[in-house]
Image (tube, rainbow, N blue to C red; front, side, top):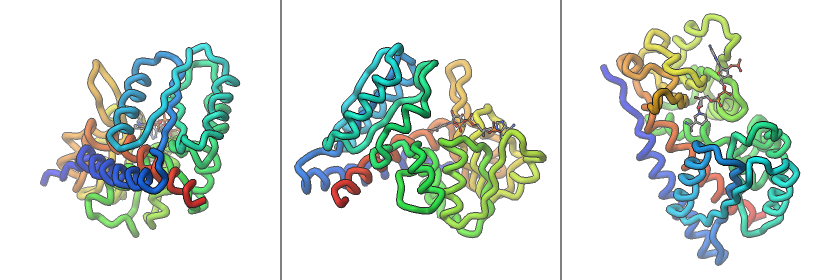
Length: 284
Ligand code: NDP
């Protein structure tokens, strides 16, 4: 039997529609639009496209965006100065620093200046720590999107064996924490894991966040599993996931395509975090 394809585009559209409603209600209550500041440093072509897409998505969701473009040779303390100004700006609810920053700029140092309550990417240590502790926080967007996609299948997360392949701070680790919060039994695999296949074959929920084209093959997948492919690997202008899709489709129960799976959810969750940040400030 063919796995059901999880339609990230349509699920993301539903999330964006809910965000629009919340953003409009916020406007009716407060007389101002939810605001997102987007900082782009340098001219990286992929980053420019991502920023353009994020700004367009804001507009569609009733969120005011303010974009700041800085030259690639802008010193880190100037970027920090801008972040501090935006931290103090009551019209700005979320601050996004588009990554990667140009070589030579310490990303970690820059990002730690974003006020945690405006850190809509969920990368700040305070948000990562609160996620670990199970406290209210702004969680990283891509893993939040993956949870929505898993929920959309109707397969309960509770009690399932979940395996996350990848342990980055922006995907793998927060993904594992969110699955744990949803009462899955979670295993995190990484490049030093031995006998990965024996782990993935036990996964009712398998999340691949490795960054290697078609790394997960059909023989590594438990029949009927929910397979979430975070990977975005570009080759000759084409996008490939971390999962070998056609093979996996014959084994899995549900699977995300690439493109059209996790990707659209990341921006939707960014918008959701921004409106959440605004609502929390309103009630603070
Ligand atoms: P990183 O490179 O930061 O992390 C990759 C992880 O994979 C590391 O933890 C690494 O282990 C692990 N890994 C590498 N090789 C193996 C192996 N042979 N076996 C098991 N684990 C291995 O990547 P990211 O987490 O940032 O991103 C992962 C993928 O997701 C990329 O393709 C990226 O483009 C994509 N992505 C997609 C997004 C979307 O919106 N769809 C958003 C963000 C990322 P170790 O820690 O030991 O090195």
